[in-house]
Length: 335
Image (cartoon, rainbow, N blue to C red; front, top):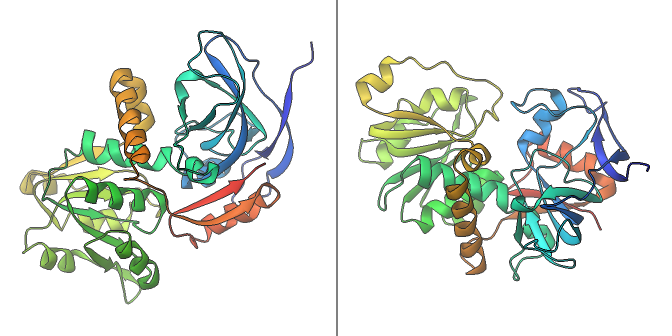
């Protein structure tokens, strides 16, 4: 029997300039027990997608692979009659390694959730990864408490905007940072209490402004998907007993931490990997997903989508992400 193929936006060679990307047919797994085939309607891009094409992400898929960590679509085939889902169900998935920017995908049943009825496929595709990351980071790992000062870096991106929204929902006072005044005003309209432009005369600088906004104490929880200079400044404006959450390194540089800082200031540096958290703690992982899905169904969470590209323009979408033009999420409409 010949292996089934699907068309996808595929990385065949690692490159910093997109040379290894093209549309081509790639094999997909057969549908077995506890697996589901989904006809994909939309997928969204995340910064790790870009890093994967360059070989710079911690997860390195075997070449060739279709890009896309999350998407939404319609169930077209199930592996067993006992499956939670049935053909025709509208579903979403996220925190999956790759393969969402394609016509079809086969996934473990456990990776799927019902699409919120109020969501479009595009909104559903942009939901799970960023909100799950924000929830695991702020609530599970950061132990955010109502009334605390939450400093969210990279707040104009998808992961950052999700953290702003979730932080406000859980009662924090949110200080959002970024490098564009125009984009930060949009984040403020999304719920941030304060906004801070981290660039001053071409250099990263925000410690004094954060201290001023927190009565000299510094932030209680810092959500950092940027790293580099932003991380270096963050350890200088964190409160005693604070939690500095390492989400990623979108700034391109991984910092070295002088360990005398957490010793003297009594703060913790905590790594956040939402998908791995669920794999290591399956029951809590399912609970995390149920919580964010319920909040979405209640209308309390909704991703901010700044631009939708067609499937044929997937490369333009990735360049848009690389050029940091986005506010929130970039989505690809597939069919």
